[in-house]
Length: 231
Image 1 (cartoon, rainbow, N blue to C red):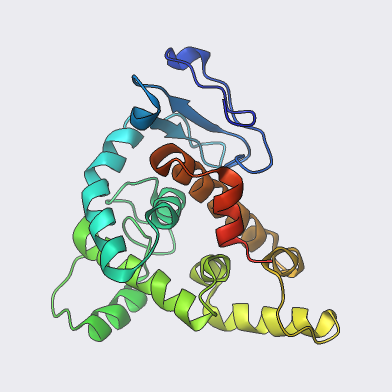
Image 2: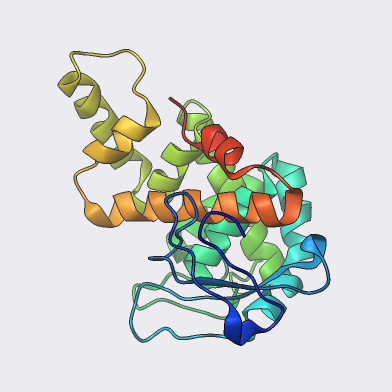
């Protein structure tokens, strides 16, 4: 039990999470226990859209991507739980998925973003539906955004969703709104972002990262949130 997460060995007895820190996608995260805490796996994570239902293959897809994701996180110095949260939110660990807007693969990169990253990384050939290429690009890109935003992961999440130019503009406007404060706490910045979709995106990824940090690395949820949301 973690907050309001109740895990049962029988998946049908599992209850949804509704606590403030762990509520992911509106409190619709379900976990299944396999033996001990170290082997707990995510059975399914329901998206906010009504047409997204329980997907029993989600854990298999996570396992397929896990080794590659961990390698890329180590290569680009990104906490693994951060990338788990991003990939889970963006693609549900489905490397073949393509959005109506044209975003492709595990980290949902647009073709022009992929082309730019390929040029920077000197990749002459790549396939955004290939998990290795996609995770290489996505992990590098998130780390790059973080580095350009004072190494703040929450700001990097926002930039991944809405673009770094918008995030910088919102941040400057928020600082002005708080009497030209020099360093704006992340929690205040989140509440001043003018788009609900982006605010919810940030909240969702913080919750997911905290969940993965607790499940896979034994970190306290409050500790993980404090690392992501700087005050």
